[in-house]
Length: 101
Length: 265
Image (cartoon, rainbow over all chains, first blue to last red; front, top):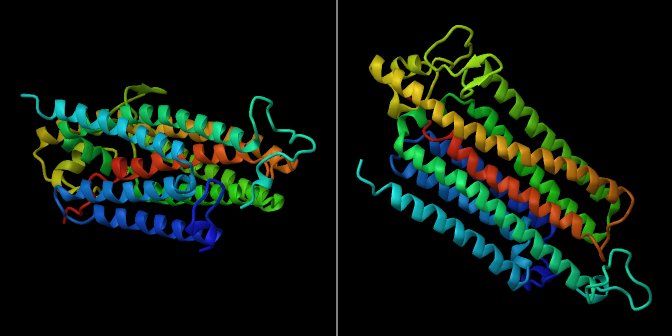
């Protein structure tokens, strides 16, 4: 990795080699998520599937979307978005899942 | 990196430099921020669908497993790889624009378009097989939803009720071996799964189609050498949109295709 990447600045970009590494990890994650669904893990099936998906999404956001190399305003904007998404999902589910049938 | 590449030279303006910005760097940051705010609204739009999906999946779990297992997982798996590949070529196109490599930029943009088109082609094949199986919710092109074995409903997993009672092709150990009455009820309820399947993959595919349209415009500008180290914001912002669409699919694949694929024997 170049010195550019070890000291991220607003203008630095990942190298093609790093993009290749990310691509390889994403492909491995896809294969893994498929085989994980064929194993009997009970409650852990969706947890494993979503953990792999979140890892893949984080890699895409950090490297393909350059957030790791972005300014603080971009980073806080991205975090705010996912924070609101978390509120949407967690509060909605905590309502529906605790209702008496 | 020196700032000389991203700020306009003292003599003469960069043609893309809008007068309200102090320099090209400030203009780029404002564009990037605007793009991210737009993407946040997209996250909330898909987020609403994902939340509704989760609530109904928990309430009608058996029906969601049955519906999910009737989808061809090989097509979904292949499409995931295609879309990840297109994200890679898009990231490389942004890199080439940043480095001022015009031909590489054009080649990577064309590859992104090709992979995006392949994705939509596979999606069309999948939709067609669901039409043949009568698994499209409601009444579409003269066929009503029917997962309990109706006339004119052909396909390996068309009769979800039969599969639930005597599993042959479907995976999904958790819900197989049901008595006839329960199997028919679950098969009818699987219509709800397909509502989410078509709404979510349909909205995603709409984003892909819009993206391919914008890509033509980006490609035309790249061909005319409009992008280089000093200015490539449109390529970079389009890349953000394309990667976002990829991320949505990264979640759609396990949630729609892989709810439970444990073999029943």
